[in-house]
Length: 446
Image (cartoon, rainbow, N blue to C red):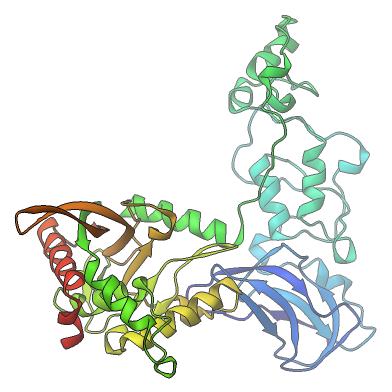
């Protein structure tokens, strides 16, 4: 008997996924435990295995479609079964909106132009995908197409986009103006402006625009997947926390000498690959234990201070910023931390990091020194109460034995959530971290 198979939970924080690739097509046989599709979570690309065996009768989402966790994403059953009735039954039921109905309960903009042509008229439909309905609602489209290009004629996002592509684009001012919109406006990219709406009602000519008024070719990039999650988290972080950034610097001369010694060490010791970044992260794990206020998370009514340091570090990947976490970093040696940095960074860049690799942090480090950035304002990885930004090495004048000399100094920028951490504890942490980096022999003794 045919049954809908739901998208499994792929991590405690994963609420939805985006389909990247289907490994099985309708009509293919599927075994339990066999990979049927590849999806992108907010943090990584994951292969989804079928929990049941059968024949794949229908895919309930196309590539680039967003599927909620625990929502159906395919139908399995016996070969040849008729599942047309199931295709029109979106789950959960309260979200289903037939194509002949209005898309949203909220009022639509007055100036919304009506879809043109018989291909856009509403009628009986086999159903629509959540992404299609969301796009139509955001765009103020009153009715869905009667027939879509999805499985069984299901209306999917690209069908709605095709309708919208046939309509003029109104500026916010034009939408609030009201009235009938012309097919072509005088704004950038032929957008309909408020003055264009007036011209229809009053037949007032508008001044011509010239080529210099247009920006030229533009690449439009959809905000989705990891980029969408980054945008939301950065916004939420700044909106929900009181961020204060303190700047300091530390002498890096001793660190550089130690690193040179590692490079010339016997190869079988594995020390030659230790980077300055690994040495800074090692120092942070030791200093944090002496400043528990910084190794903490803020939850409104309580602050949780952790006895172990679970150290997150920012990694630049082709898909955007990711923050893997080295668990129990305070119990690892410098060599072990260096190895974990390489392993986790590679997993992130290859899209193979697991949800566990990317969760559970208590403190985060972001290093932009390789890009020549001396100091910056790192944004908190909420609910963590602190994040350290590491800058580049610069030559700084110092006095030694009554003479002027130059030394290498490393920029350090600490952002704290002032709701949970005052400026003085943050300053003490930065001061002690600077001392430990200046005297690395101290940290290896702890």
